[in-house]
Image 1: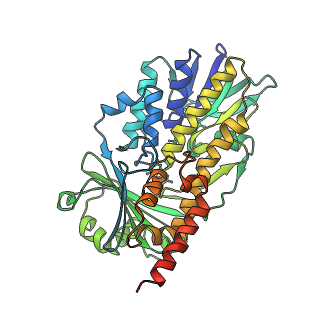
Image 2: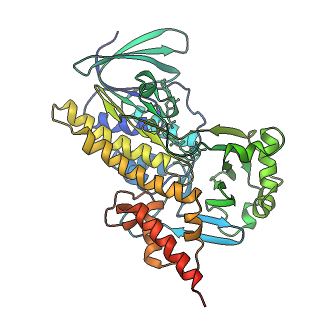
Image 3: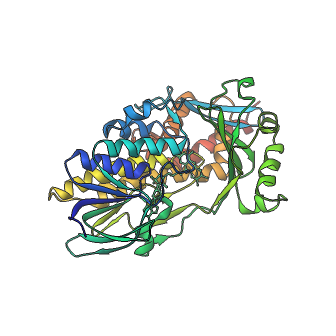
Length: 413
Ligand SMILES: Cc1cc2nc3c(=O)[nH]c(=O)nc-3n(C[C@H](O)[C@H](O)[C@H](O)COP(=O)(O)OP(=O)(O)OC[C@H]3O[C@@H](n4cnc5c(N)ncnc54)[C@H](O)[C@@H]3O)c2cc1C
């Protein structure tokens, strides 16, 4: 076993990179252990403006700026020929007005490479298989290297940023079922050969495909577009054929998608992901904190995954630094409750998307401009701005607005 390090970070995705950069910046020794060889594919290409603040604060923004990713200025929803368009420049909360649509393999590689450049040791192709925690909060982790060898890593604290790996919740049995219905996605990257024939060809679009079913269109900077369908298991089961046939049938089932992507060559055969919503009992414990997807992942509809990964990791690592300095940390109030508030706001929006409430709001005639700005700020990831009624009282605000729209439409002359 080598020398005891201050912090072991599990996973080199956005959450892991943010934690490592932040803790290293404060002079503590950090080691990142990552199961895969980078670059590696991961889904989640659309970012939210709220990520930008974190990237800037931990010193990782400049390196991403050099990557020439596709800029993203808003969120656009489509249902048939109806469009609901949100521009981040026209939002209620103060904050960033743009972000990016990124090739995640390159984005994640750029982040972790910068983390290595500033001096953090990163082991790729190494899997954390076990952790023993001690009363003084230190731990010994078992790391299995690809060649079969095993190393023991002694650390004062562990940040679990292992995403779908959910290392500590699995080891300590902290996993809890999500409140959201299980859903499935079939997606691929396609050559967007007709992109330039369309208005605003590089805009991200969420297409309302059928009740409870939607499509993401995320144009990337290299002419490739990420295209994915999300719906219930039942929706996909009813479509005949294998995964590729189902994907193609979905494209053929919508006029816009058929015109734009009907003959689009696939960059890779369609893949599937399913039942991704997950949460845990606790976001921290004796000697560890969970960040990013490990804490909770809701749904892809509002592209909130990387935003929560970066914000939670940034906050958690600030508190880890506080702890390493010997200062008291109120994990419940300063971490769990804070992150949960943001997650709860998005959960309300996710549920309202699938039960049709948001459809009513997004495509209503003559929307109130202030309300639109407030909703836009949620869509930009500013879900901690208590001045915004769609954050402060998210559920009440959305239900009330839907009732008002019903009333106005029923009484239109
Ligand atoms: C269908 C779908 C579409 C999505 N679309 C979007 C989107 O458009 N925008 C968005 O923001 N989010 C999206 N997401 C969510 C997004 O994928 C995640 O939220 C994001 O990747 C979380 O980042 P992370 O750093 O927490 O985890 P990850 O990016 O998953 O990184 C975790 C890392 O930990 C490593 N690891 C796992 N286990 C171990 C172990 N035992 N030892 C060592 N290393 C380990 C993994 O190899 C991985 O590299 C989508 C999710 C789904 C399911």
